[in-house]
Length: 355
Image (tube, rainbow, N blue to C red; front, side, top):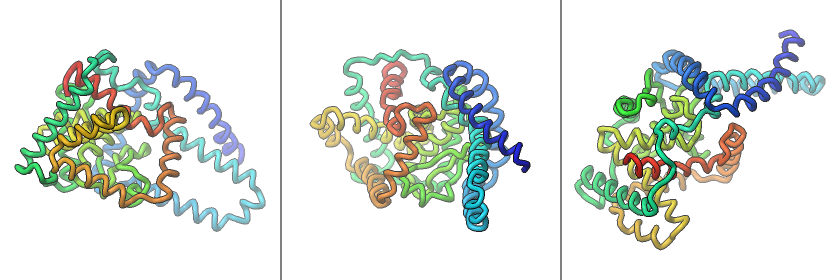
C-alpha cells in the first residue's frame, strides 16, 4: 500500500472519532437511520453468510489474526526498530480501519435509545413493589423447580444438548415476537465459542462478534445457565449494545418461553439479581428470603458459584477492568456495573405489565 494512502487512512481515524462523538448526541437519529435502518440489513447479511457454519468463524478469524500479528513482529522486528514512525502509522491505520468496520457493522448501537422506550411504561413503581416482586419470583421459582424435579431438594438439570438450547432460544424469540415485534430474530447464528475456556477464566458468559454477527456462548457454563446467556447474546444481535438492555431482553424472552426449563432458568436468574439488591440494602431481609428458597434452587445457584470460583485467577480483574473501560468509552457510563441495573427494568416492567 502506498504511503500517502496509509497516511490518509490513519488520519481518517480522527475524523471518525469526532463524527461518532457528535452523532452520538442524537440517539433518535441513530435509532431511525442506523439501528432500525442500516444495521438490520448488515446483521441479516452476516448471519446468512456465517450462521449456517457449525463453528465460530469469528473466533477462528481472531486466532488467525493473532498468529499473523505475532509472525509479523518476529520477522519484521529489525524494520520496526529502524523505522518506528512507520510502524506507529501502520498501527493507527489498522485501528482506523477496525474502528470504521466496527461502528458500521454494530458499534453505533451503543448510541441508540434504550430498549425500555419501546415498552412506553412509566419509571415509577409502587412503594412496596420490590418486596412484592421478590415474593412473586420466589414462589414462581420454587414452583417451577418442584414441578420439574418433583423434589424440592433436587437441582434442576436441563435435558438438552447445547445445540438444542440454541434452537429453543430461537423458538423463545419466535414466541416473544408475537407480543413485541421489534424482538423478531431471523437467521439465527448462536454458537459455542472456540475460546470457552479462556472466557471462563476471564469471567464472561459469552460475547457478540461484531464483525460476523455470531452470538458466542461460553460452552463450558453449567447447562442450566445457557438459556439466559444465549438469550442475552441474541439481544446484542438484535442491535442492543447496552448490557442492561440485553440482560432485560434475555430474561424477558426466556421467561416467556413455552418450555418450563427455560422459564425456570429466567425466573431464577431474575431472582438472583433481586436477591443481590436485598443483600446490598438489607442483609436481614436478604437472609429471610434465602431461607424461603427450595434447597434445589440453592443447589443451582451453588452450581454457578462453584463454576466461577473454580475459574478465579489473578488476571480476571484485569480483564474485567479492560471491558469496563471499553463499555465506558462506548457510551455506557456505568461500565460493567450496567449488568446489575437490569433490576430497575425488571421492577418497572413487572409493576406496569407483569413478568
